[in-house]
Image (tube, rainbow, N blue to C red; front, top):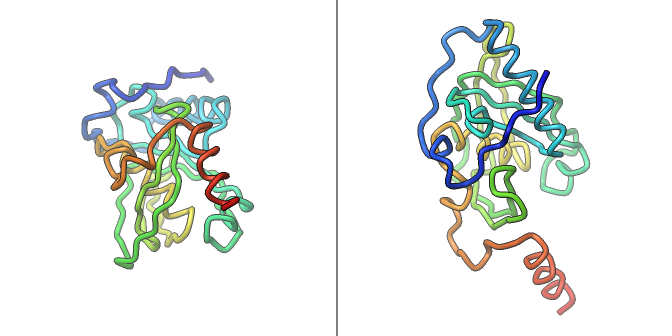
Length: 181
């Protein structure tokens, strides 16, 4: 396994629609996923899409910590490590919720991003079998965020009020001051 270099905002690989994976069971796909998992773990990320490591393929890896899931409106069960190849998303509700997002490709920054609260998604695993899940809360947010990378979209493109986009430490001070008022 190897740590991969994470592409940062401004790199052209993050601005294009990624290519579908022809064979999810191919050894090179398995190797890329292993490297992505090591890279995500090293960067303390929750998710990572292949374009973020300079590979324009429709592959996403993610997990949802149970504690964060509970804090962000989910059931608190979390989601185990998931590998999605050629994922598709369907919205199940028009309801949207705004929440703070960050990204390994935009280090030290975050912003308020509206996302659908309830989705269904399909993807293939490394075994070549298609699976389907429903997601809500933080789980739905993570899946939408990571799949956006596959379509050349970064979270700042979805921010409605750019006043909510900034450096982590500055925004955290602002949020704390607002909470104290």
